[in-house]
Image (cartoon, rainbow, N blue to C red; front, side):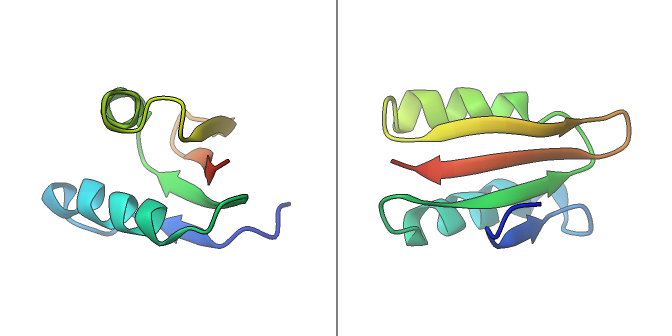
Length: 76
């Protein structure tokens, strides 16, 4: 279990999820991260991060379904 804050978006409307996740990423200090908890594989979000923040983020799967996905997103 990490000491990173958790962002559980499972109860947020899908249209708002990326906005919440990106805001959490922008608020991170260098060397920090947060744990995203989602109800599906957030792979499309990874593509968005890769396009917008290439080389400026870390992405580590902690749990990969089938009902819960947990990903640590960090700012190096």
